[in-house]
Length: 339
Ligand SMILES: [Zn+2]
Image (cartoon, rainbow, N blue to C red; front, side, top):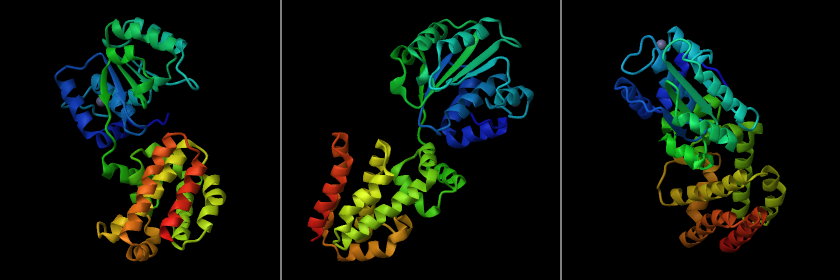
């Protein structure tokens, strides 16, 4: 886990989740903190930062309006995972095992080392084995002393219902658009890709994966080429499915993204044709000139028929129809419509 300074953690929590951090500062001021929370939200939505900030506020020597200072010894020791009364549990490999929960419980059965307060954070709580989760359950129900716990998960569906019912659920909203854009900039994403990315996801961790080996740029370029060949009524569009698109797509997520991109490139045409956007809003600005030409030429009925075709694809994928078949059939039908 990446270690940030206390001030960086607080800043990250406040920027990513301004409303939640403000809510928790009030809860802390009025001493209304519940003893167990379940934080759910996409990777990168700031769950760890918020859990750490709230924990710091419980120990900080200079709390102000329910907010930690980020500068005192307590804040700094929590940030560096070295505070004796704050335990952070992470998956050991792919799971959180019962031994890790036992260690946590042993740690907490001693009276608080320095003061009265104790806190623990379980990162990746969905990765607890059933044994570990059941063992934790008893502990959550009958905590010894003044204990606050935070369970963090990207996927609430994988958390035992008995855990959900004994914790206070906090759903983390997606990042505010301006924050998302600034994270894209920090990742070094090309600004010409911002619109497309925003139409596909709100999850910075996903974008990080797409950036590996420049995957996003490659697939965007291939789909642009496919789109241009299609509009030349060229059968090359059909062969491109197997030779160019398929080699770049090796998982379900990639398949879904490709189908979404097909919708987005045609949506650009639609939006240009009906003057719904400026060039600054194009998802495929790299082929802006061609999109304008196509939008000008294509009859409205053809365009709508093609978009209807593209929109149907995700449903077909959900029905487990073979991805390559979907792409090839879509390409043939589009060529027919454009004839
Ligand atoms: Zn402090």
